[in-house]
Length: 332
Ligand code: PBG
Image (cartoon, helix red, strand yellow):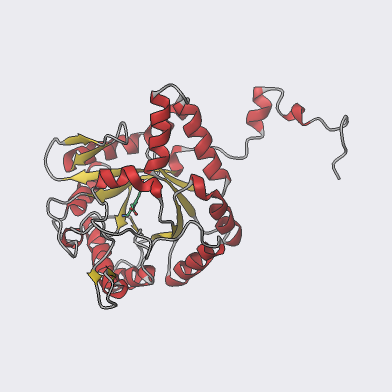
């Protein structure tokens, strides 16, 4: 039993910066952060992303440079997204040996062999219609065909593995995607390669700036038939997670992060010991940047507080566009 005031004064735990530091239970480290990067064709090309200040679509040579920087900063890794030269209905660049992501993976691994290189396994950046898989209308309604997409996802993951990816991260929210990818990888001799599943990924307006960055806005409709409804019971996330674990997921992810801290805590409590990641998405980054540009918020303080909150909610790993800055801030 806690004795009350005046025996107990919790301000004693805060009265000195050293005491506060001593009892910190949540600490940020660059080792837990993963930096998303966008690869595009060309050489020496840096095309800034207007809604994500400081970030740009980069040609493969510049991805290599960023990989070297990430390694020097001690980041946990990078995750690569590709913007291909040509899009088509099946997103075939995504599983081509000469695809943009495959080139970027090889360049990053050459430049920084010890840095973890993750790949986002999805189709929305590669399809001309912008959806996360192969379309069909056999139900009289155009939608992504789940099982046809599974075959293509396996193919894509194998091709990322062949290029040298260290972890594959499927983000399409197809039913059975982890199993299909696991079977594909195992069949191709990559049984050692981990899968980080975007297990609880919500249909979120916070992806807006990313869709500019990745040129992946759906050409019609939206993603609500595959991504989760923010208003669904929180426990639906547990069902997604249970299925992904049963299918062989090694890491779990929740996305977005800040509006879904309850989901993170729920999963962390239910599955202690399963590494849990959170994606601090483009919109979460952009709104702080925009407010900071107007002098309305202190970017550094807000970013660090947000990332601490995400870790405190149960995520060991954070994918964040602030990763390089955080590494520099923490080193100061
Ligand atoms: C899908 C994917 C998306 C993001 C990561 N992977 C976009 C989407 O589902 O529309 C969003 C990341 C962000 O907003 O930062 N390949």
